[in-house]
Image (cartoon, rainbow, N blue to C red; front, side, top):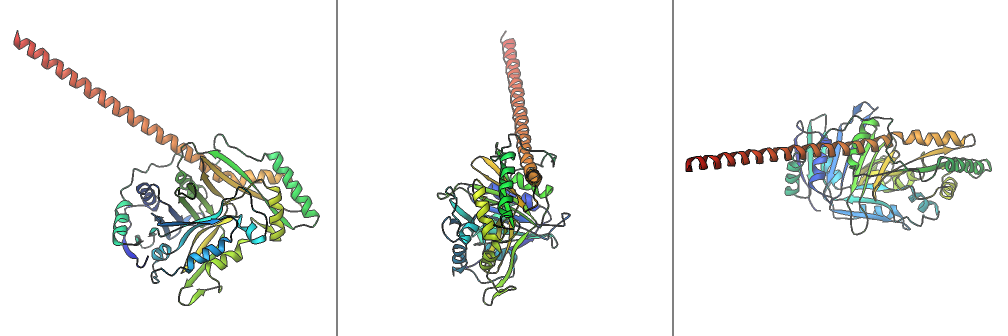
Amino acid sequence: MSTLVIRTLPADHITPVRAYAALRAQSPGRSSFMFESAVSGERWGRHAILGYRARSETLLPSGFDPFATLAEGLAQPATPEASSELSAQICRSMIGFVSYDAVHQLMGIEPWPEEMYLGRVMKGATVVVFDSAAQTMTIAGPSQGAVNRCAWELSHGPEQQSLPAIDPEALPEHLETPVTDEAYAAKVAAARERIAAGEAEEVVLARRFRAPLRGADPFDVYRALRLLAPSTHLYFLDFAESPFAPGLAIAGASGETLVRVAQDPPAGPRGGGASPVEALRAAFSSGGAVGAPAARASAISRALEVGPRRVYGGAVGYFGPEGAEIARTLGAVWSDAGYFEVMTGARVGNASEPRAETERTHRDARRALSAIRAAHEARKARDLAEEKKAAAERAAEEKAAAERAAEEKAAAEGDASRGA
């Protein structure tokens, strides 16, 4: 990509959610993303960032340093010259996630046998930035044709139905917990014993909740989450199926900024003296999902947990030649292989009570699970609307057929009468 085309248009006729839904529908089989923010849970942030038709994707394979792979991606020279437009900066960036399990790579801890990769990033998307203050949307893309197509497609998607009323206490039907409450409480007790023995000061133990997809759209989970849990970081990543990895969607809301770096490519990074990838590496093994000290706590949680955490406690966002904004992925919903998955965890210390910590995991997962239930209800509502529409069309066809038959009968009777 040697040049970028940038176009700014009025945005008083369409919302970011509706625009993204249209772009996503217009490009099936292509990866896309959406980022928003809410301040203090009350006011939406100034910018909403959408991207679609990503031109390439990179997997961060297990067993290799994911941060080195990301650094190589940023070091590639074929980038256009810098621009102050946020849309252009995102267009040049890598967008995606790094899983928590990259901590094992950093700490020299044995990876999970079933772990295929430690992250995925997409690049080269056509990007739209909505500016709520200026009431504009700015499109950046690799060509004039891509920008013009995006300007048309974002307002020509299928009808966007509103979500049914969201119940913040409702849980998905057929909810599964691969580790039972009793088994999880026992793991908390085991972690507490190891802390009492001086092996660590605090250990974070994660657990998984699963619910079948049941035909629901993962983007409806995001739509519900932004209402149930407005946060400084709201994100939706939709990775298309490829020859190297299955399709995957991640919807989440996080209040924890992991890395924010502003960088001037000719002069180097501003504020902190580190490239975005170096800053991410340095920050990755800290935070509420790891424990302390990080190496020992991670080893204990690896021994007690039953599988990879994937996105829980990892990182999501964008990083490019001009900086990065990356959030800790807490409260995320992972969707693939016919299931929605939510992970949460308890911070176990000397005073932790196993049953109380187990109950805490249910409370912490509640909003994400309620968002899944809302997506299921949205699918039911769409199915019902389609059934009603199909019934109305059948009734109209039957009425028209009856009218035609009556007309034909009247015509035949008229012909017979005249013949007599």
